[in-house]
Length: 295
Ligand code: HMG
Ligand code: MG
Image (cartoon, rainbow, N blue to C red; front, side, top):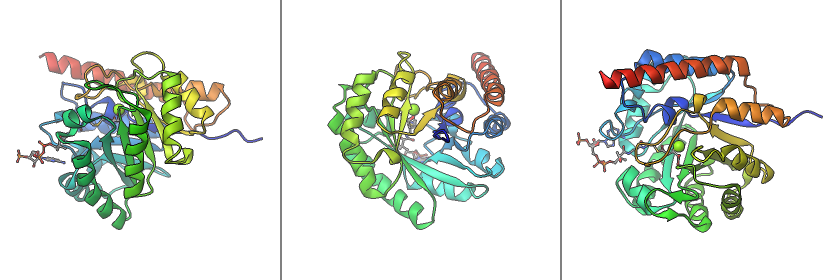
């Protein structure tokens, strides 16, 4: 019997680097993406067309996307929160295959902190972005943040996550990634959240995006696998954190997810040895950025 395939969506160049305070060159960002592609990753989030005042580290995403070679058999993604972001994206992201990702929160507190608006307003902002992307044939992915806990509002009800996922589904039949933004989820609570979301969206359209604050991300992946999910987000070297989510550390490390899935008999298409090379590069970039920030 052929073993089952699990898709890994690499977050390092975006969710990983967005929180780094020191300067990181376009060449370093492009080098990291190329190393990840070389390791076999075929879904790589490479930046964000967000306000440079809010996330300075992503301000040169247009230069990154303009420089990257086409990703053979895969797709690069960028975050796009509003029409201004779409304009930046459509001016600079012609090479290769690009998709965009829109993002909302299941909790009001994080929506205000991250997007400066309510959940309802964020949905109104993303609708024209989704429409124009779909019209242009650009794939759209959606994120729901704070699927178990919000750094401002505390625990989040599974129904609130299902509602948010339903709103994204109604705007377009898109794959939806479920973010445990601050990594407080436990297998029980992730399971309860997924049971609620699965009433609205099939497992084939869901991804788990688990930050690893409490060291539970792999266990949360296991409960998600048991409920039928075959798509997970992770960041090489465990890079990461969201600048607007205090206490959000790295995403679960891609190396750990790949090793875990291979041990369970799943295929990922990722070469662990080449991935190790990308992880070393990620750590060097991060160390240099921190040194730059101190000088
Ligand atoms: P705002 O200040 O309310 O926006 O921010 P505004 O429309 O009033 O505009 C203010 C200024 O920003 C204006 O410039 C705009 O032109 C500019 P000024 O006139 O002052 O010079 N601006 C932009 N510039 C470039 N690109 C844009 C853009 N939009 C406005 N797209 C806004 C609202 C949404 C822009 C802001 O809150 C923002 O950029 N937020 C993004 C924050 C972010 O990127 N967070 C991290 C990603 S989400 C995450 O990490 C979670 C995830 O990983 C899943 C999980 O773990 O849960 C996905
Ligand atoms: Mg995240």
